[in-house]
Amino acid sequence: MPSRGGFDETGHALWDDNRISDRARPGPSSVATDKMAETSTAGTDSRLIGSHHGQVSAGDIAVGVIIGRTSEFFDFFVYAIASVIVFPKLVFPTHDPLVGTLYSFAIFALAFIARPFGTVLFMALDRAYGRGAKLTIALFLLGTSTVAMAFLPSYEDVGAVAAWLLALTRFLQGLALGGTWDGLPSLLALNAPQNRRGIYAMIPQLGAPIGLIVASSLFAFFVANLSADDFFAWGWRYPFFVAFAINVVALFARLRIVVTPEFSKLYESGDLQPTRIRDMIATEGRNVVVGAFAPLASFALFHMVTVFPLSWVFLFTNEGPERFLVIEAVSALFGIAAIVASGPLADRVGRRALLGGGAVAIAAFSGFAPQLLNGGTVGETVFMVLGFILLGLSFGQSSGVVATSFSRRHRYTGSAVTSDLAWMFGAGFAPLAALLLAGTFGLIAAGAYLLSGAACTLIALWIDRQARRAD
Image (cartoon, rainbow, N blue to C red):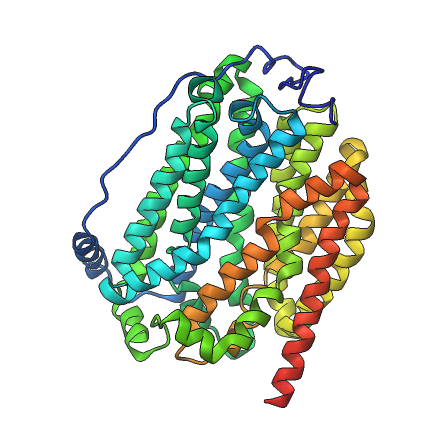
């Protein structure tokens, strides 16, 4: 049972500088509600937004993709950080710190479970009312469910109901994320020259480290500059309000593109048209399975260098969270550089070769790197920088490595479903599994989860290679 680091001997939060201590108590709050706009109105408004713009260039598409992905990842990282330093004390104060964090990570996984259901729901809305209406409703739901977490009451206010409210908002967050698939990465890929597909494929992935940098920096600022009472009463809530504002910006950036004549032409021709999921699975089932498991190594590493290390440092060391949040933000800059480098590298050696080589490197990384988290500032920094470099090289090409196998008719739906399943199996349970293994058997056991992801990637790529040869 952890008794050091972010908690005192009673199991409550305690930073070394005493800015946040056991005396802190979250204040009362209420859940905000908003009325959702009518679907037909949303579709009309989105068409009006696009009607004032001319032809959209590949640069415009890239900007829209990065903004959209940044907003999605920022929402997730805001919850992930709060699940380590806020929710165990706010929602699960009757449990010891490790168990409370595990409960938070279990709720964290709910969004990944809900995401495929959201894809089914919003694909139906897409077919019935159009892409603009679908995105408006999905991003509105994502923003409101995220900001609702800012009004979450504590266990002291409502008892166990607080945990159920947190689970509900997290599930709705995942449901909405299933509807945010806009086809813009596919549109970007369609605009890619033959010899620059890797460069175009890495652009959507930049949203992940950017979202982490913004979320980590916000929390680090509030933790470092607020007293304990202020942080737990209102300080931790502000990043969730920021998430809502970012979602509004992302909505308009994406609507500007998806309602253009160029996008509509691709939509009508079938390249970006949603099909019924059961029909797609019946035709493309093998590609869905391979596509879901091929990027598992990078998706597992994703949360092993973002969410899990923060929980370990907070629970099992004497260091305050603000310092490690800064380390995360700085290390994410190396991740951005590695993602950019993955583009020309993939164009040179091939995306499948790069993903396979990345899986081998991640497998080697899993055998020694987690132990660096017990090595103080130097060890933690080395772990984070190496992890983000490996993540950038593999994650930068993970989204499109098998998507090209889908037929033109099922490309849009197949890519969405494959992404949902890959995130659910590869990342959704990573923080929970890694912390449970590390808390029970030590840090070396956390590498076992990462190693299993690398093995799944190599097996999936081998199966895909054999199937492509047979075809």
